[in-house]
Length: 418
Image 1 (cartoon, rainbow, N blue to C red):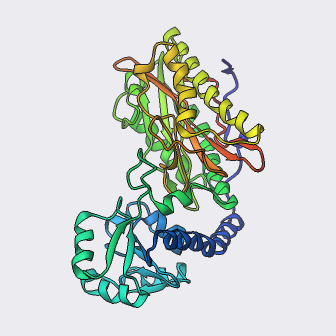
Image 2 (cartoon, rainbow, N blue to C red; image 1 turned 180 degrees about the vertical axis):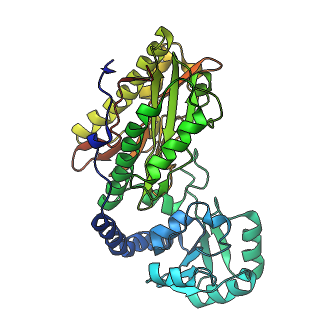
Image 3 (cartoon, rainbow, N blue to C red; image 1 turned 90 degrees about the horizontal axis):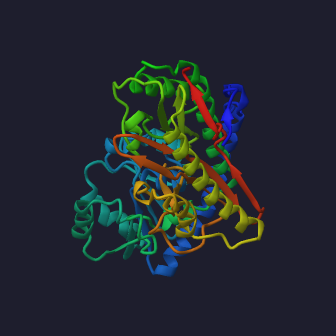
C-alpha cells in the first residue's frame, strides 16, 4: 500500500467545465432526445401500450429537457410529469413553470395542469389515443394511480417496472435505457468527478485535530459549489473515528481526533450529472488496525476492478452485477470480515446518484450494459471502533475495450493533520 507523501493539489486534476463545454452538452442532449424517445416507443409497442406516463424528474429531463432542481419536485406539484404517446410528448407545467418548460422542452406540448389532473386526464388520454398506458409504478403514488384510474375507467393502467431488477424497486423502462450512457453523459460524470477531486484536495490543509465533522463537511460543500459544480450530488458525509462505521452517517459536532480515520463520502453535480466518491483519510499516525482494514478494502476494490478489466480486454461479455460484487466480497469474507460488509459493491450513476446498473448480491443476473459508469465501493465497518470505505467511479466501454477510473484523488494512504 502506497503512502501519499506529497498531498495532492487542486491543480493536479482537470479544470472546471467551460461555458463551451456546457453548451456542447446541452446540444448533445437535444440531439439525443429523438433516439431516446424512439427507444421508449419501441418498448411501448412491444408491450402493447399506447402511452407512457412518467413522474420522475430525472426521466422528464432525459426525455423532454425540463430541468427541475434537486428537491424541487416536492413543491412542483404535477409540473414536470409527462406522457409519451406514439406521436407526441405531453409535458405538464403550471404557471410557475410554463416559461421554463417552453424554453427547455421545445419538442413537447405543454399542458397547464395545476391541481386538476383528475379533470384533465381523460381529455389528455383521449387526444393521445391512449387506451392502455404504462405508468412509472415505482414512483407514482397509490393515490395518483387511483385518481387516474377513476378519472378515466376506460384507460387501462399497467406498471412499466422491470421485474428483472429485483434489487431496485421502481427500476423501469427509462431507467434501464439510462443505464447505457452516451459520450456526453460520461463527459459530465467525469467533469463532476474532477470538481470533487479538486475540492477534497483544497480541503486537506484545513483538516486537523479539533475541527468538527460538520465544519469540514460545510467547507467541502463550499469548495464543491465554488469549484465548478452546479450543486451537490447529495449531502456531504464526513465521519470521524468510530462514526466512520456508519456507511451513510451524517456529520455532527464531533471533533476530529489524532490517530483516527476520517471518512468523506461526497459528490458534485455538473450539467445534471453526478459524481460519487469515498475517501478514508488518516488524521495523524494510523493505527495498525486501521491500516490493516484499509489494505483489505483496497484489495477488495482492486479485485472487483480487475475482474471488469479482464472481461473488457477479452472483448466481453461483461460480468453481471452479482459477479462483480462477489469479487470484492470474497476478499473481505476470506479475511474474516464478511459480517462487516453489508451493502452492495456498487451502483450506476448519472442523472441520479443511485441508478442502474446495480452491483450487489441481488442485482440482475445479466451482463452489465456498455457503455456505462458505476461505482466500486467495498467497505469494512466495525461498530464503535472504525470504518473504511474506498469508492471510485468506473466508466466501461466494451466496444472500445476501455475501462477508465474517473475519480482520481489518490487511493493510497493519505495522512493529514500531523
